[in-house]
Every structure is written in C-alpha cells, then in structure tokens.
Image (cartoon, rainbow, N blue to C red; front, side, top):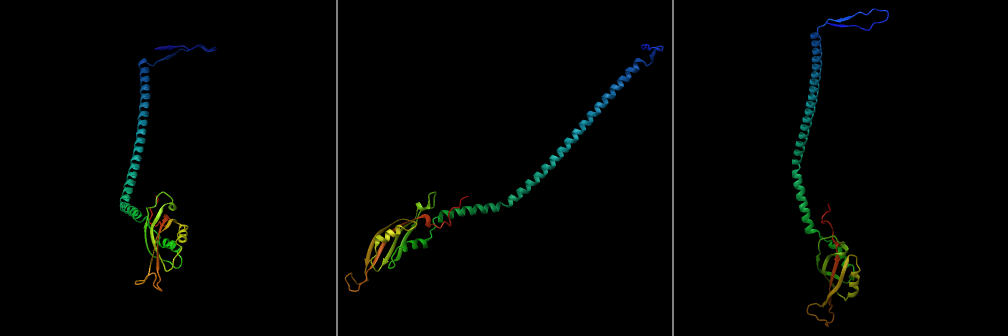
Length: 226
C-alpha cells in the first residue's frame, strides 16, 4: 500500500492520498499497454508490406501487359517484313540488271549527231560513204570533254577534189572533237577508163581519222548515283 502526501496549501488541511492498486496489477496494465503498442506496430508493418506487395504486383502486371503488347507488335512487324521479302528480292534483281546494263551500254552513243558533226564540215560535193567508229571507255570520274568517246575512220567521196587541209581544220574546230586528221586519199575512174580517157570523171576518196569526246554519250544507261 502506497501513501502519498501533497504539499500543504494555505487555508486547507493536507489530506493523504492512498493508491490501492496492487503492484502486480500495475505491472499487468503496463504489459498490456506494451503489447497493444507492439500489436499496433506489427499491424502497421503488415499493412505496409501488403501495400508494397500490391504495388509491386500491379507494376508487374502492367509490365507483363506492356511486354505482351510489344511482342504482338514485333510479331506483326515480322509478318509484314516476311510479306515484303519478294519485293526485296525483286529490288535486288533490278539493281543487278541495272548494274549489268550500265556496264554493257554505259558507252551508248548518239550516232546521228556524231555523223552530223563530221558531215557538217564536208563540202556539198562530198558524201560520207563509210565509217568505222568504235566507242571508248565507260564514263569515269574525269570530265566527259576530256575523255575519248568515239574513235575511228570516216570515208568521204567526192567527184571533185576537196581542200583536205581546210576540211580537217574545220573538223578539229567542231564542238566535241578532240582530234582529226587526213589519213589517205585515193582517186578512181570508171571501169575500162583511165585518167587520160576523154570524158572520164574520177572519184576522189578521202580517209579521215577522228576522235570525239564523251559528250557524245547519251547517258541513258549510265550507272545511277545512290
């Protein structure tokens, strides 16, 4: 039994207070309060763990759903790509054919302007009767005006003599001509006649050599830059 006495107050008599609870009851109540505090702490921890678990589960579920969506998208893209495989093969074949055509016909020549250039310097009595012209190399990195494109011989016939030097100089001055020269000159008369036969008209044949640059190429089959 515990006795306590408060300090006296002026005008009142002090009255002793007595705590009648046994010491064991006080300890029991303290233990009960401690147990309640522990229970509250454990319950809070359980609630926190449950909340974290629920959040982790929700996050995992969203991640799985997103992964499933991405997998479906990947599958769809692969299906589309497989459908385009024939197109890819066709494009590859087309590229090979274009490369082969550029290799085989990259030196394609516009022959009409070539012969017109030569014929333009020949006097009106002369006529181109034959030619032996070959194309040059494929277009390269150099300037077309500096590279040989067409080289060969041209035969010109005339019933009258022509000024060969003037004709060659005029041909060299033409656009696209790198070089030109006179190779040969022959004269013929009709069968059974000679140069002294009265009324016999000789025919003069001129052989010209000529080289034109690559500006005469059409460029229709040149390799395309990518």
